[in-house]
Image (cartoon, rainbow, N blue to C red; front, top):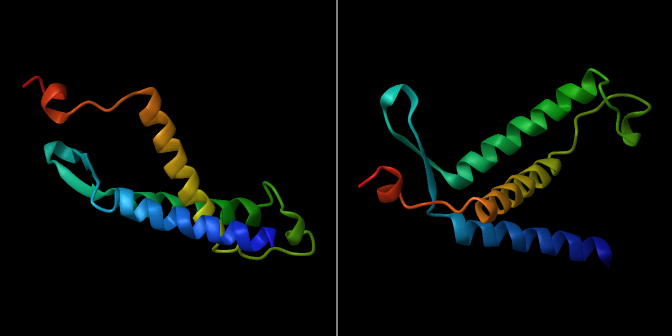
Length: 109
């Protein structure tokens, strides 16, 4: 029962993040050219690279999960969802502490 509740709660959080942040995007400026990246794509990319780093770390035996004591295997892809939700929570907490300001105020207009 507890596992089903956990899975359905996660699915609800993923769906809610899509509804809330589906149209949001980051603007960054590499080489003085403003570029736009959808927020959900950014979260997914960060989650993917964290999952990849986690696999490299366990392969190099920097740490070993209990299921890997008898031999290394790929960390389950489901962990990417945990990284995604951690990124989302981190972003929300930082936004609460440091309120974003509108672009017009930031640019001095």
